[in-house]
Amino acid sequence: MWKSHPKALPYLFLSEMWERFGYYLMIGIFTLYLKDVEAGFAMTEKEASDLYGTFIALVFLTPFIGGLVADRYWGYKKSIVIGGIMMGAGYFMMGIHDITMLYIAMTLVIVGNGFFKPNISTLLGNFYTEDKFKDKKDEGYNIFYMGINVGAFICNFFGAALQILLGWQYAFMAAGVGMFIGVIVFLLGTKHYGNQTEKKGVQPGDMPFWKIVMFILVPSAVFGVIGWLLKGVTSEANPNGYIFGSDSTDAFIFACIPVIFFYGSLYFKAKVEDKRPIGALLTIFAVVILFWGVFKLNGSALNTWADRYTDREITGTTQTVFNGLKLAKEVEYKKDTVELYDASFRIQKVDGEVQKTVDYPVYFRNVAKDKLPEEGATVSLWATNLSQSINPGWVIILTPLVVAFFTFLRSRKKEPSTPTKIAFGLLISALSVLVMIAAVNMGANGSEKVSVWWLVANYGVITIGELFLSPMGLSVVSKLSPTNITSLMMGGWFLSTSIGNKLSGVLASLWDTYDNKQDFFWINFGLLMFATLLMFILLKQLNKVMQEKGIH
Image (cartoon, rainbow, N blue to C red; front, side, top):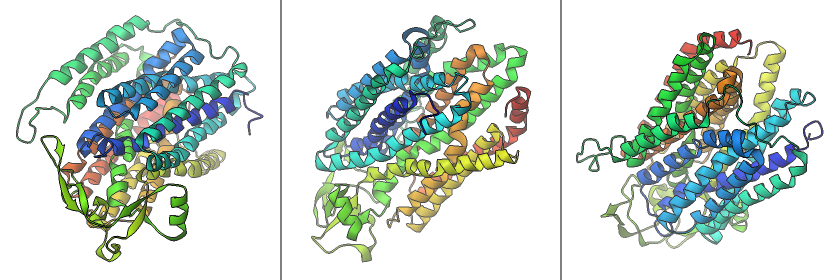
């Protein structure tokens, strides 16, 4: 597999695999840690989801700046190494039980990812500019993408075992170790990189960095501060006077205003021949925001579904294996002093203090009466964060099938255009939400736990949507962008992902406000169907632009 590719590919593949190992291990336990009353920060669903959404939004915002700095000043090797070290240090610090330290750790991960993520992908592309590798570029990226998902799949098993055996801190430390291994592997491949890691410098037609700072970054920071300080109407339902649900959401939305205005101005100021391609890209950016908003619920609302509403009890051989590998927790069915939750699993606080009661462990709240164990019996429950391995597992299984499907259509000259693939990706993703609506109905709105196969089915369907849409994004940006603003338009793709991630946090923070959880998923279905309809309405124009540029 490797022989026909650049010698750097195995090193970049393994570096990215270990980096994603660390990142997805951390994401898999992040909200669970925040909500843990005993060893975490006892956050409510709203608080944890809001922080999670802001975190993953900023993680995808910094690659825009990190890519520009590497291109023009630092070069790729220096940027990747510094970014990786910052992320690894951030993961190690996350397990320190102090809220200030948590925020510092998150900042390190956010900034570090900005330097690591875009530049290792760009570096990989640099090796395929040589004539002998050009026709292998798509295959190279497919191999690289597989590395991402291998790391994302295996990490949760390590995270679960370490958390059960030693606690949250050691699970976060494992993420840091994974990241540092990724940096070491990257450095071991140095002799194969040649001059491909060197900076490109400022190219003719590039927007000066000071302009980007003055016209994008500074206005965003100012607007973000205004959003944080500005208060809306205070009421009984909104005692703190938030405009969009929380200070962080207000700040993020306001900070996006100058950036969105800037990208709009690129369209209006563009040459006549560039207007339609830029307009097409801005349309795609707007539409995929809604996809990421729903897709990224895997680390928040769907993690909660796995924790509270999924039957996680294991018996027989499965129990023996999972207990042996420390992937399951032993929970005793007897009354004790436990945290107080209401009927909808909302943790009860008074003046910020978690209330206690004498009851059975909360897991048994919605176990069917005929399935409850005997008093004093112990049951084994697989670790919640293992559900985070379902999506990358599906990616590993389905990627060859989706690639083969499009190869078959291409051989018959029936392969759909990139915008058409994105449109169908949105439609398929919307259908995945119907699986969760059925799961809520099957569990009588959470009064009884349901099988994990509902989550498996949901992730299976949305993964097909992801494979139709996600790989197409950067491809269409590189194809349609005017050459003098390609980096800026790549930044636009990351910006749309970032806004989508924040939307995901906003959606998840509303989980507790829906007594009927079907309504929560119907909202998600509606958002994706709106995006789907919009994309299909615009499809004719988008395909026309692609044809004008001579691309498919």
